Image 1: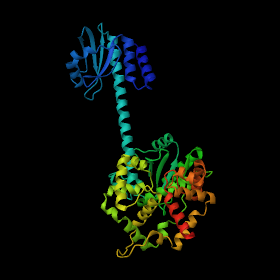
Image 2: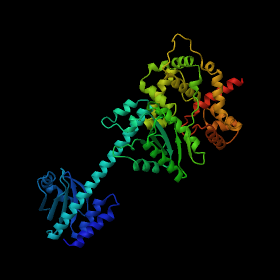
Image 3: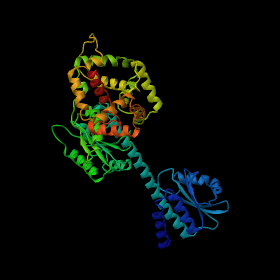
Length: 483
């Protein structure tokens, strides 16, 4: 075969490598060089690709020969079928081997046979590259699933379960004393590129973990190994990387949590979400969580815990899965929970319905959700309570001076007009259109006031909505004191 022919084959491969049907383009090139019709046959019977005029009727009498070649008994063969001269080349060594079939009206010349052999070698390399791409994509998919599974386990307060998912090669993050969550907001394409660029061969990111948020397409959740006692220098590298990305890209923003133990990853995530809401309004577009007391921490401990456990006791009668899904629904919309867990929205609604019937509450109501969320936050306490104690009503618990001070502190940064809009929005069950009608302002004005309230409070109200429960309680506590 002339060097020019081989060079032409290589040029064709390079030129067509950008197209999906590279194999078909190479077969067309071979037809132009030899005037023969060409097909690539897989599993001895299936035509993967062929030139336009290939005579498919020749394959039936060739079936026994193709089967032997696919099974590794022959590397090449020449025969006649349907009055055509046929030359066959088996490709590669993995069985069943694909077979290159060249059919023409005249007997193939030595140059044609040599060119066919070279084309077979090229197709074998293309096949291996394709198999490698498939294997790489499969690995990436599995690695992404494992990372998401680790995040799920940590958000559920199960670091031991997260370690079990990585038995034999536990990543440094899961051996750390604590972590800090950096929540990066950026375009989805950039998010995926950043995660892939910094991924190590184990599917993690050094001592840290980057997870594409399954709920918000523009969020990259970065779990950085850290402890209060000792900062991990590798975690500092990740932190500086994320800060530099925000500095260099005007559309990015970054929310940073406080350091939390692995078992409190959910709390760290909530802090990062609130910090991100505040970051979007700052010049640097970066904000860290500044510790503020939680309502459950200022209520009378034993009395509040008794109230919470009494309220949630009916959940003992529903499947644990339904209760777990309800916990997620306190901070995520139904569509987000469905995407997070890989369930349909109807399935999520069915689980929620069981919980609503057990509790006797409508969890589409924002105040009911805030009440259940507070009870869930309190119920994890290890404090012992006397089950014979008469549980106080929630409004009684809220009358303590510490609760009022907490509410006033939370709402103090709000301007009066933003506070009125926020109150109207809550009274309208977080429906901006209804709130606009009640307040006699436009829906755009309602949204503008809510965005301003987000910035002032440092709470997420609109993206995921994790701050809405605190606002509900703070407004109700101050309203009750005013009466």
